[in-house]
Amino acid sequence: MTKLLYSIFISVCLLSCMDAVQEKKSTTTVTDSTIELTGTEHVNMDSVVNTAPVVSVADPSLLLKFNVPKGKTFDYTTEIDIIQQEEGQKISSKMMYNYILKVASENKTSKTLNVTYGKMLMDMNMMGQSMRFSSEDKPDATGNPLQMIGRMFSAMKGKSFTMKVAPDGNILSVDGFDKLPQQVMLEMKIPESQQAFFLKSFESQFNDDMVKEMFTQGFNFLPNKTVKPGDSWTKTSKIPLQTSSIDISTVYTVKEIKNNQVIIDAIAKYLHDNQNPTTSRTRMVVDATSGMIVSAVGESKKDGSNVVVSRNKITSRQL
Image 1 (cartoon, rainbow, N blue to C red):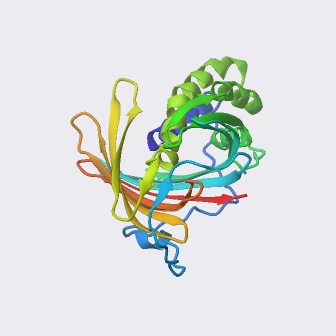
Image 2 (tube, rainbow, N blue to C red; image 1 turned 120 degrees about the vertical axis):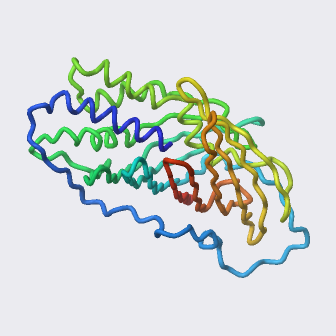
């Protein structure tokens, strides 16, 4: 997802600059407050766990699978805080994206979710310049070309697609996402001379594989079997790139079960060619009945000449 948003940012900036060669330097401001996710130290994993008294049960085991009933709707939000150090240059960004998830239909092998984009925010600081964009921005009278990013976020808000999710959280298929680029382009009123470039840039990053990557962390962790404290299982996946892929192996371990919630610790390793691996650790609280993440916090770090630290937070609530 990080690669995706940086690529979109660069693509949209290039598109914006087509009409801005003779523009004077200007700034963009929004009314949203800066996204505050974590401090400068490690994420406090214990902060995600419900501190309510433990309810004793005779059999501390349960079936853990994706089991949201038809018609139920959830508000689902992801926040990401990234710091990248490369050749002495520091790049930091904060991102937030929100979705409304509703189970539209179901059968014995899958549930079909209707996914609708909600509020989107991006706050970036690179080479001493701060840039902030939001789906809630209103264009100002100056016609600042960098508002193109906020306009794109605004155009995406309210757009929907569907995806089929298996009991183990595997995303089986995505439908309707291929219509999104054209819809967004028309709403943004992109000039005809720039439409081909916009569609190529947008579609190269926003596609079915990206959707599956985006939602893997939130769904494809479920074992679809009975678990108890101390149980572990492993999930493997790939993030497709233009000429290769990133292999991901994640070990999930049940830390405890209480109040119909399962507390899970996850350790993932991301492997790409001969590069140094990226390791992430996450603690999540999962509702045992639905299989939905209630809350989660995580942190990942890539070592080497270019250091990248990423912290993320997921929250959901039933509407």
